[in-house]
Image 1 (cartoon, rainbow, N blue to C red):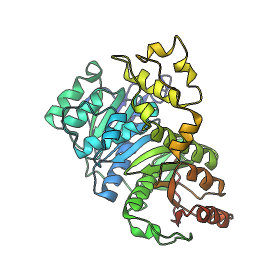
Image 2: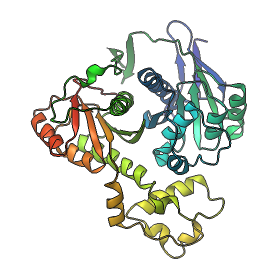
Image 3: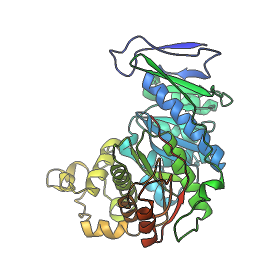
Image 4: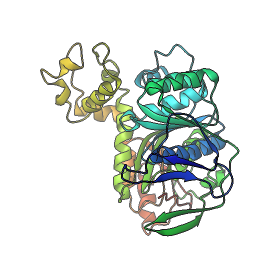
Length: 393
């Protein structure tokens, strides 16, 4: 198949719409549903991300995409009891395979942003992964293959309309890519930069020059994630998964704050008060996620006020105070931080430190590199200058 007609483009008024190959056949097969223009943008960007994560780490990888940026990305390390509970996968009878664990992590890191996502998997989708996908609000999934059990489960989702795409894992695009803006064609070489090697850590200007193997893995995950995130972008990673992604901001400090706030929320969801919230029976997953988000925030009274808490809880929970939140966030340690370009000032490091960042990888090359290095040294943070910019538009 050389081309596939689509219902419309980014918006219903943008017709006609299609995807097509100028040479050869499309490397994608639609196994179920009717994918749209944005579905394919998310699917193809997500597939590239997980393919590179798998190549860089040797571990199955997954990502949760929304509007052409990842909301979460992870490799399939085993989940602790705590993560299984906060990701709401502790009730799955099927043992979680590495690809299922990768998806649970990718989806669970920022559940609010992942609502209605498009999923990409580096490996064959199995029964355990399909069972996790089936229970979430999602638009579709792309993978190199599906077991018969998994495909049957996914074909039942959304009354049979759930989008399931299979991509040829051996497909390699042409080295030159094109796109049009306002009738004008842009051409550039594909971004084939290799982010797997230890040369990323050759230039370490900080006093602390120690990067553990886990830190190197997490920084590779951060940089590969940023390679497919709309710029400006910053990514916090811990234990093999992105825990905070700031995408598409005009100011880098706003990226760092946005992603840092998401990382803090991920960590706060592990606070005992949050993990033990007394939910009413059969609360909808989206209502539960939104309630947690509000309970953690400064607007907590929106769900704790009389007449409101009864909608979500069997009894009124105690407030999670600002002091308790600050103390809990201070316990987070060993976080890795990647940036798609240089940090212009040390204020980014100041903000990152508040969210437990101990390792940084960024391009370097700012006229204020000395200030950034000085701020890292102030907190004993190890920072590598990669010399690599990863803008994505």
